[in-house]
Length: 235
Image 1 (tube, rainbow, N blue to C red):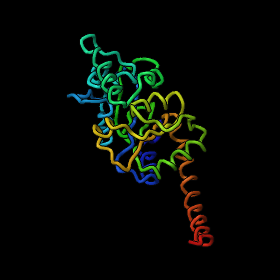
Image 2 (image 1 turned 45 degrees about the vertical axis):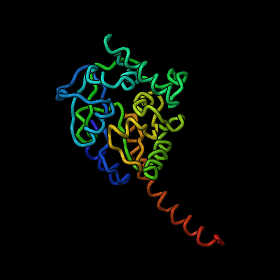
Image 3 (image 1 turned 180 degrees about the vertical axis):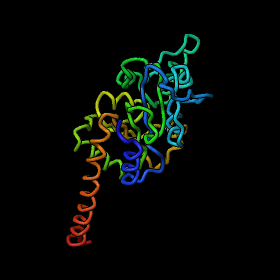
Image 4 (image 1 turned 30 degrees about the vertical axis):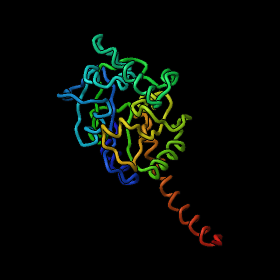
């Protein structure tokens, strides 16, 4: 298994992240990871807890409070709560936030996970399926360029709502970037100046290596463009 603590440090230094990258691990069982205790209002609330340093395992029922997150994670709601998804979708469409014809195009996990482990990348107890990064757009630009250099950039446009679709999208297409929806921003406390990127765990080392090259290249190009600006600007 790679040294995920060292990998996290490499990303933290270059991306100047305010919060730790989050490892998402889809498993058949908990793998000995402590079971989540309590309740959260959304699936992305688990991202906040993991970024703060907690590592824990969730089961499908832990995600029932989030109808949209349950949908993107292919988690069927129990019969007595099945009405909650059409209700929230009805609210969203009624507000003009979403069009119902957009729903079938939202990425979804191919099958229901039995356990989902969340934790900081550096403390990952197993190889992550997806790693979530929150950083400023300027830093995520570097990450996008690194993913393209590593051959794992996706062809998808910037993702919007729901933010949780970034997990199945990354698994299916490669690295994706999300602007972060309002629900995610409320539940996670992510800053107005931050966005998300999601990278398939299998590509993490390649992206980290490429990121160092890209970061150095951007420093050199910043000097080059600054010089051109000074030399060629007339106003």
